[in-house]
Amino acid sequence: MSVYLDVNVIVALFAVDPLNDRTDKALRGLRDTLVVSDLAGAEFSSVLARRVRTRDLSAGEARTAFANFDLWCESQAQSVAIEGADVAHATNLVRRLDLPLRTPDALHIAVAQRSDCALLTFDRAMANVARALGIEIVKA
Image: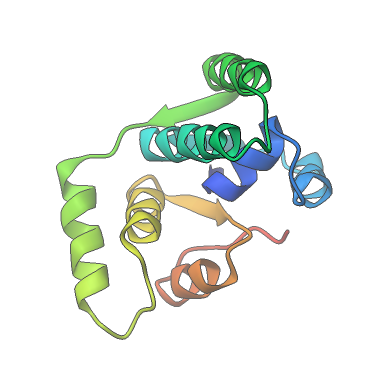
């Protein structure tokens, strides 16, 4: 099985975060292929940049986290790119109106579905929607 990582998991892997312990525990037992999209990478970068601007993180710490993330993606994770079909699928999910989804979460769900991945997220609302759409949720 492959496991798609939401950005909240990725941030906690590479920066000091309230979810560090929960992330370590969730990943400790996994022997599955970890999947990271280019969207998750962009969101990860955005979160760290925001933390630098708010002085919750130094620029040096952010650069180190970026470098560690890039190395980890090359050696420990499978990268997947967002495709036009993912955007179309995410748009359809948001337009259903019965699913409480923001566009980034809909895109993550679309990529996880296309990639036939289980999903690891700490976002309860996103997990509930993904589960309702038939995506397996990794216990965290």
